[in-house]
Length: 255
Image (tube, rainbow, N blue to C red; front, side, top):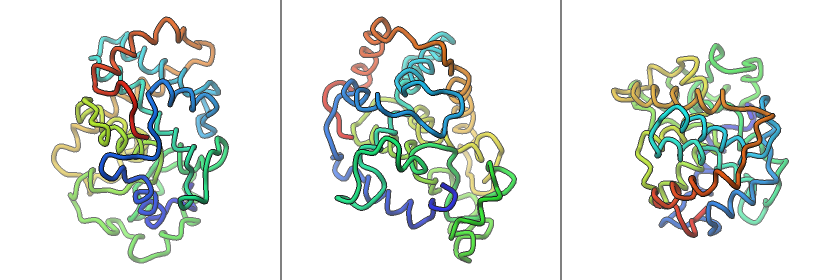
């Protein structure tokens, strides 16, 4: 991930997964997408070897038990569904495809900002930073790189992964989830920012509010994982199906 997540790669993935005109690569219901994800286990997650749907239900149920609103519960259920991207991979169209084990360096793991120096004191395994070609490119290897101070979180390019893909998918399908929930989906893997306090010089007024929402969400993303709690999907699903419909995500969606 550290060696391949460059500005060029992130921009290429952004072009591949544009959802231009609200249209994606395949139409599926949430249920059908979960069926596709049954075969996917995130190799970057050290805490869980269960299918993604179980982790998502554990997250959603933790949020529900804590008394948080329905939109936040639904965000918990959907936040990792961008890993459906394994169906289409990271290559040029026509040169990649269904590969549940490959391409995981562009699906999971901690993200970071590309286009500026990778902060050695805020990422795991900083010894691998030098493998990134952008770290030796004078356009990208300074404190601000291609950005200006105070440009704002939404103007930063994150290492490509399921976060940005799922954010784009929800926006393209006109999900009724509020911006706070969409931001949780978009930024929850950027641990250098929300956990280690990196990139403060690039943030603008209002980003501190986003930070607090993402920190709240990540308590449930991290600490509801339980290898032995496989969840009663059949019992729980009608409740979440109602939320899916309520927030405009019932029926066929573009993925």
